[in-house]
Every structure is written in structure tokens, then in C-alpha cells.
Length: 258
Ligand code: NAD
Image (cartoon, rainbow, N blue to C red):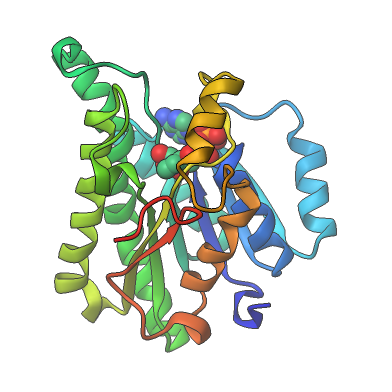
């Protein structure tokens, strides 16, 4: 348990399903005030909010498409207004868009992948920064930015995922810049880098493909979204990780060992 997460104001982007949704549930169970985001409002929003509150947290949903900077600005402003400030940003939204080999990458595809994975992270961080800094000053402890990288950001990505891998590598690099220039604002910047998780991300894989991928993972299986969530809690908690910044936690079953 992370007692200092009780009442923490957390914004998690791209969090209606998969790794992000598991993180929302984990923060709520710690008693946090969680704003979660997706492009569209989930049909079952009311029961979800009820369950999160029953679990000890409070939660609010904001629909916004984080590929667009103005939407990201609105998302952060509305999140801060609802929560009364911001202590942690988890920028989780991201994805492949599609698998395309290098020969088929045109400008539209480049924009689609980099808007979703890179532009969104930069602007979410930029918009959250003054609020996170204000919270750090008021609380007397660090606020956290947690970006979601990928094993592909280290390895270059699997078939047709070269551009996605490059966009994730860009995040790994952005964190280093932020540490150099914004630690004085009271912020810590870290990444969680998932390996292969059982989410819609891998919906294109049949049983044989899943078996092949699993065989290359020392733990022998895909990760479950809930297995990624503790890394976010740890990095958000100043008591647990107050001296950790500029780092990347690899949550990948041993698939990649830097
Ligand atoms: P997912 O596809 O299951 O969920 C993605 C979430 O992002 C959804 O809630 C969706 O609504 C939201 N989203 C997508 N586009 C959005 C947009 N434009 N604006 C706002 N929200 C948007 O994905 P996941 O597998 O849980 O992945 C989460 C993160 O982890 C992503 O950044 C992904 O790149 C990364 N990742 C996943 C894996 C994996 O194996 N699943 C591996 C490495 C990295």
C-alpha cells in the first residue's frame, strides 16, 4: 500500500481500457482522486464510477482526443478544475495506429502515429507542469510525471511498428530533458515501459502468434494490465520513489533486459 496516495489528484490519459484502466482502478483503491480520459465516454461509465468510489477513491471521466493539442489543454484544465489541482500525470494514451512497413509510411501515417504517441505526451506534460509545480510547492514534496514507453522504444519495434517504436523512444529521451530542466519545479519524471500486455493492442494476433511471442518471454506469457499498475503507484508516491527520477521501469516478464 502507498498511504501517501490517499487524496492524491491523478490524471491518467487513454484509460478506458487496458493498462490505463487497470491503473485507474489501482489508484482509486489507494484512495486517490482520479481523472481518467478516453476519446469517447464509455457506455458503462456510471457503474464504473460507482465501483471506483466503493473501492475508496473518487473518480471523474473526461472525453478528449489527446492527438489534438487544444483537446489536451482542455483535458488538463478540466481535470484540475474537478480535482482542485494535480499531483501526478500518467500519460498512458498511445498505440500502434496500424502496422506498416517502412515502404508504406507516408506523411499522413507519420502524423497519425507521432500525434498519438509523441505530440500528445509533450503537450500533456507541458499543460500539467504548472499545476504539478504548484502542488509540489504547496505539499512540500515532489509531483510526478509518468510517461508510458515501450519495449519497442528500446528495440526498434516489431513488424510494421518501426515508427511506433521511434515515437516511444522519443519519450524515453524527452524524460531526460525534463529532468535536466524541470526538476527545480519540484517534479520527478519517469517512464513505465510495458513489454507485451494482454490488451486490445494485440487484438491482431491469433493463438499461434501469441504462442510464438510468449515463447520469447522468459516468464512465458503476456502480462496482465493489473501487473503494470503497481509501477505507476510506486512512481507516483513521493514516500516510495522521492529520490527516483529520470528512470524507466521495465515491466516485461524479462522480454527485454537493458
Ligand atoms: P489499449 O488499446 O488497450 O488502450 C488504449 C487506451 O487509450 C484506450 O483507453 C483508448 O480509449 C485510449 N486512447 C486511444 N487513442 C486515444 C486518443 N487519441 N485520445 C485519448 N485516448 C485515447 O492500449 P494498452 O495496450 O493498454 O496500451 C496503453 C499504453 O501502453 C500505450 O501507450 C501503449 O503504446 C503502451 N504499450 C502497450 C503494450 C502492450 O503490449 N499492450 C506494450 C508496450 C507499450
